Amino acid sequence: GAVLHGARFGGATFRAFVSFISATFSGEDTNFHGATFSGWSASFYGATFSGEFTDFGGATFGGNAVFAKAQFTGEFTIFENATFSGENTSFIGATFSARSVNFYGATFSGSNTTFERAIFSGAHTDFEGATYSGAHTDFERAEFSGATTADEATVKSSFVGEIVHWGR
Image (cartoon, rainbow, N blue to C red; front, side, top):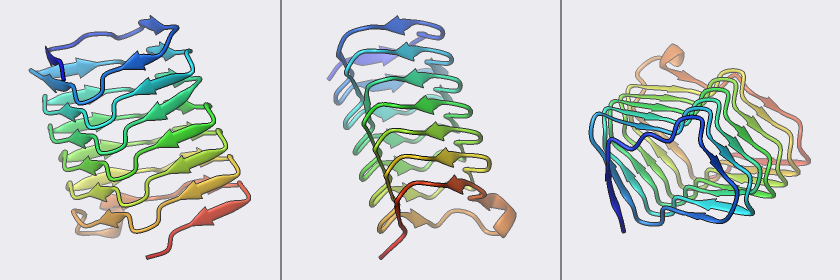
């Protein structure tokens, strides 16, 4: 895949199918803050985000959002107030080893949202205020292993879909 050093797409609009499959995002920061993905799919399948900051805060995904098997290894991974409204949002098998992972206030309203087998091993993981209103939300076999206190693993979210699965 492509190697992007210090990628800055903040506020950009992507209207077609977007493919960053197996891309490597390195450098100090990767910025998709406030970006709009309005095409049928944005795929970051197998991408690696190793820069200090990876920022999808306030981004809007109107089509499918695919982060399956992506690796977030930098210091800060931010999806704060991101909106996922496409039919499928997939973080299947994604690895979040960033020191801080933030989905604060994110909205997942598409039919299927899955974090199945995702691994959260950083010191701080925050889903506070996130809303899941699609028909199916799945955290099956997801691992939250990095937080050492309840305050560091915040999952104060609203689940209003038909099926929510947290099984092993």
